[in-house]
Image 1 (cartoon, helix red, strand yellow):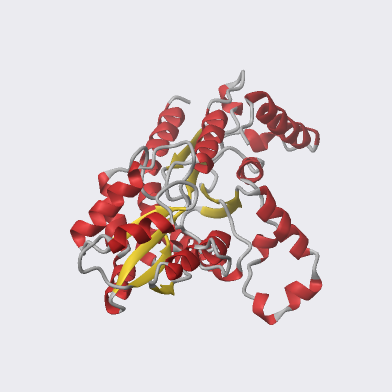
Image 2 (cartoon, rainbow, N blue to C red; image 1 turned 90 degrees about the vertical axis):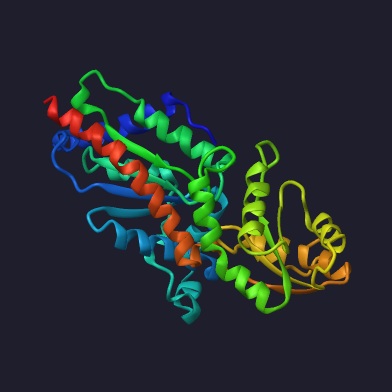
Length: 335
């Protein structure tokens, strides 16, 4: 959902009014505050899939010890499910769920997390997308950050978000940036190694989208084949190529193995991975490929569980940090 500046202004004005009438108007002054990072993911309700997001968070916390690090989920449905689970004592007391951090039960969207951070006073904030490409979810997040960055006040000192920036998705912007595609190729090596060990074609299932360019997937596929071997295929849920097209392409390849190692090319192995990819329905990728005569092994871990892939998001944060810090230094020098 895209928020207008008027809606955002109303939201922030309400928070400001609450602070002013509570006698704490000084909270909006530019006093030194610990900077913050907001990791914005689509989210997941799957407990195993959640570990991929938490692994990224853990590594970001270690890489940025001087920052407060927060999580946000952009999916309304996923947040609602966690909020319902928060009220379910049986679920929370189940041993299998004890590893869920308390903040997940109260998970918020990016705007609410940012408003909560700002309520403590203006500070430097880095928002990092945990998306793979700059599809719909990333685009909405980008528009939110730009709106907040552009929200000015009559008195500049009262600007609620004076220093805020957004880190790019894993593969970079547009059709992918070579630097980050190269990092992704290196980070995906463990999956290639597992496929090779199983004498299998590696088939990666991305999310994709219906309205933005898909060139980034073909570029990554070409880079993976050049680095490792030709038996690597990338398809997506939302747009071609799908499992049937990939199966046909494998059959046309001379000497291709009869086995398939099927893995999600998503940060989280959530609903898409467990149902669209590895589900029992006849239209799932595993069912389609098996019907084509392939022996299929599935890998149900998100890319966020691979430390080298998780660290790509750290690189994006390190790329945007100096830009935002330069703006902060310029503003403070002009006091």
